[in-house]
Image 1 (tube, rainbow, N blue to C red):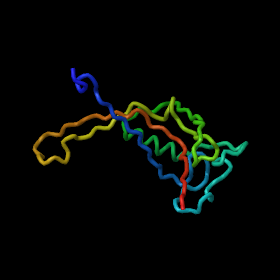
Image 2 (cartoon, helix red, strand yellow; image 1 turned 90 degrees about the vertical axis):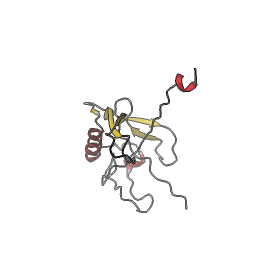
Image 3 (tube, rainbow, N blue to C red; image 1 turned 180 degrees about the vertical axis):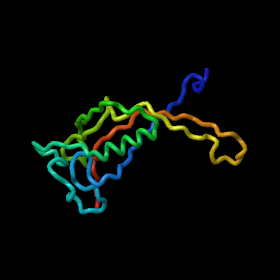
Image 4 (cartoon, helix red, strand yellow; image 1 turned 90 degrees about the horizontal axis):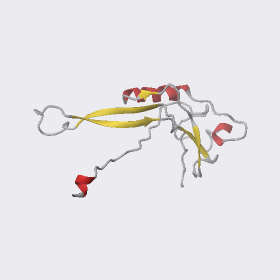
Length: 146
């Protein structure tokens, strides 16, 4: 039996998107691109003691719209957790993210696998691509090497 007949290749992609919010996901600091380094920060961004994050309502709205467009099941309850690890762009040492209970799960998109082919007389043929989850997490920032 050939390896091709014995195994099915499965390719997964992790796709990140940046939501067009005016402020960051857990504080009121600007997301404006091009500002001077270290100017759009606050005690929450830096993880200072006593600074508590507040979830950006617009980010949740945009992510929910994306989940609906991807035919996902929107969870009634989703949970954020800290991912503790060293990341050079994240001085506080953790990232607030979702995994176990994300905003939405079990979605799909359908693509026409015949689109763009020379023969336009053929009927469309659709393939369903599964979407495991849609979740929110804070961005790890940006490093400049000048």
